[in-house]
Image (cartoon, rainbow, N blue to C red; front, side):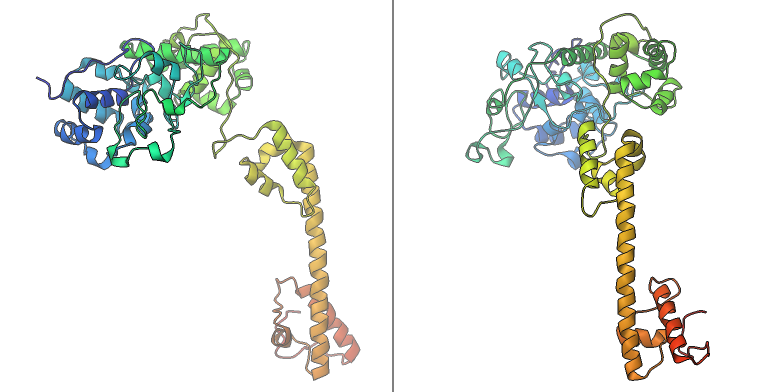
Length: 437
């Protein structure tokens, strides 16, 4: 006998396969308890994992990566649910079986999303959350051909429920309790493009194969990557990197098995070669459907400045009165100076030239100010009848003359001029003079 009610997962073996977190929330609702209470009261008794360290009323719906694969959470939750319910299909509610086949890092969306049309067709209590919505590269619903919208509550604060009274049920906004996320309906609807539909269909086909129990191998994926690169590059595999938009070094690692390929670059290769993703995962490069989807690198802060905007930023930086250095502009754009030199050789050369001109001008102005300050100090020393030494200059004006300071050359000139005027013929400037000859 099972500890919990053996609730049947939805969509297993299809592209609408339910996610692990969606099943967890529906299971808690079937037992009329909160998700946190069920996890602490039931799942902790059948697992070695201390779920109290990662329980929170909004954690389960917010963390989309659990439904895909996170090594420290997905397997523990999946194992605990299986022991409590004895439902065999739970092993197919995540992409954990692909952990050693492709690199699943960064595959999950940063926030939950949903399709409003799906929740209108299948309302609460039959609503569930497909695993397809949690994948970041998928931005559209393949059934209704409309864009996915963020599951963020847009209701006024007066309609929002207290934090500890919120329930986590698929198809219901946990913040205000509106059915089908009707609080988000003010978002403008957008029809999907052909490339977005292709991505959603290919990703759904992979989810259907994984949830049906089909197994894949990393070596088969590597062979498919090599064959698709040969097709794209017309016999020259590393030309595929330029066509698809990623680096040759990373492609070298994928083709030689140094590292596993991520899902997004694999999609790009399949789109450029016209191969279905499931066939490529099996190592078979058969003619299929493709699209114009290409890879776009992500900058460290998550944003990417367009090419024309980068050129405009460089030109504006060169026109400033105090022109910044190229490294400062590169830090503002979150790229390296080498990248800017290769992409914008004329603009970067202009910035470097104007920056060096400004530096030389600043040095000249500092040298003039230094000479004027030292001349004033020397004049006061003459009036007081004291010798011109480094110690007296420090005591009189607070300027420390050392061998490596910028005051050294001006001080030597003034010292030689003072000796010539005194006509003493003695090179000794006194025992207090610390300046080397």
